[in-house]
Image (cartoon, rainbow, N blue to C red; front, side, top):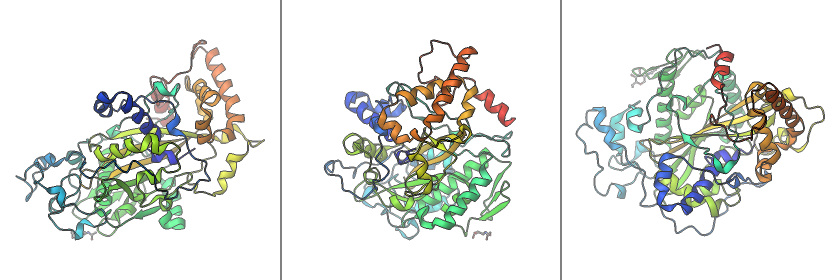
Length: 488
Ligand SMILES: *[C@@H]1O[C@H](CO)[C@@H](O)[C@H](O)[C@H]1NC(C)=O
């Protein structure tokens, strides 16, 4: 599966947007507003051969596009709600010419002039006055999640994402982020944390880095994430703001927030990947400045850090022509309160989590193993979200890899038939990109069998034409099966 794509918030999203914007110019604001982007075919998901290294090829042209004067909508009006001494009574508009005193992307806010401003129009002075753990739901406009008291980490299963689509152009692959599900933990939590800690010990900066100037964004992301955990799973997570200690009752750990780097706080408590893009004040474009990437196939932090969006995506064919403009523009303007989510999928032998280029697991993709057992074939879904941080204006791309044995599809209405359709008739470039070939000799016959069985049982009508399900990215009745399997 082509995880480079994850980078792209779904390159497909951007491709379809680009197409849409050209065809329906007058509607473009509405389109982005609603995030109802009808996908243009699958071409955006084309991916480069794995051997292509990302490189730092300079893309020619398009350099006239300029985002120097483009800023995301400020959420300064939220300051009024926060009732903080020193801040109360401040104008909700930033002072005139605020953007002539930008906090440089490479400079720590801790060392910057108090009267320098982030791209969201907050001054360093204001940010310092907000202190630790300000109310990010007010600041971001994305509500905190509702508490989930019945949640049991020992039994919890991820929601059964099945983001299969047919035909591609008819469907929307992106939706508004569900605030309750920004971060999702489940029964593999402790094991995954441990596995990832092993990866960090072994690979260091290849999987975790924060470049100078990313201090504020990293702190903000960490604080938002901890606020989320404490609100969502109050029976497992607790923040002592006085002592600045974060209590994790699943792992039985306490994190000293005075003494732990924000990305490490995230790393030790949330088994998900995060990439932070920051605005370069000299160009208005966004660069990958900090992140944790432990579940990528074919790339890692080391191979992409410091790059601009188009450099990160350089290996994707047609990116420059079809996506670069929309992508840069989307990042430049993305409102903080409009977070989005999507899933991308592939099929794997076993559960390869981290596979930098040259990893031994890659060899599985080159053969159709004779004795491959169906039980070793898994769907891998990367569930992704994209949101802006309210103060630093950093854009955070986050994803988590989830594995499900394809045998599960047997009792999931329509899923075998739909997957079969995509495997049989999906665009060649897409299927190559997803690297499904190495398991197709086993998965296709199984899906045929399951589909036939569902038709015989009357679960799926005989004349059903495979198409994206209304319940997508789930399937009819998924909640019942999911609750039964979890036991809550
Ligand atoms: C963290 O710093 C705060 C403020 O300086 C202090 O009150 C608190 O005791 C510190 N916590 C720990 C665990 O040292």
